[in-house]
Length: 353
Image (cartoon, rainbow, N blue to C red):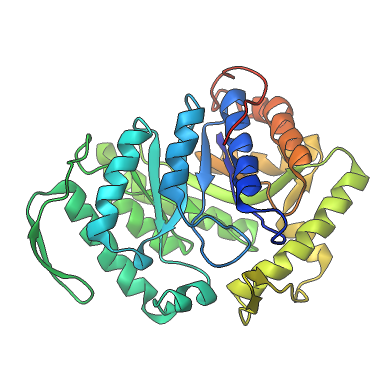
């Protein structure tokens, strides 16, 4: 099982500033590359202060300029808010500028506040996503593409320049339901999923849906991968573990506000709302633990057949503790999962920005 760090920005207030926010994320990416992580992952979100990244392809290019080997995954870009006739060309350029290290993770969008204010109501996001993905694939694969659909109508055009690799970079679909995972895999896509607060049995259903589809595809399914994302943090001791769980519980009050709640946002800052679940339930849903606990908790994912584990370590922890956590995961946890990770490139964190 390989490992990725999700560079999910947290902007607690306007005092931090965007330059410092993204310098922190770049330093995490550089360290992950140096320590042999397989990938780093970039979200796309606008107008809010959690998971904040309004320019994921630009950021992928910046990361590539400062790293050597790490795969750079968009995890995920929100296709319905983009015009595929413009976006396809941006994808081609980003693939070139990252020297082919880009994996394009795509999804329909998750936060109603964000989608509504960008003019894409959640009620239409599924059908918009399906058509956007079909248009994007056509533009990356074919010359002189025309379209007559529900959301796109245009005369023949050819995206320039053409992708270095036919069809462009590998595409990864964000899917939660086992049936959606199965059908997306059968269409030849890599998969990213998460059980969220689901049970171990639900996680197994998600993983098994992927493997069932990949096995049915035979040779055509070889090379497809399943990435699974979870919040995880390697605590130094029990006291540190409890402190990080409390921090995560507060952070997820903001997440709940825009994911399942009313979307109360003022001046770009999401209001924390009381969680409907207890802090004990938050603890159950996260992998915030010490070294042996983390190895034990990750083992079922590897045994189930997850190809890549995406660690979200950014939920309000300060930068130095986050960097220390990334390093300790590489040194104390990743070796327990065999040779799924690269050899470290070098040590130390370079300057950036």
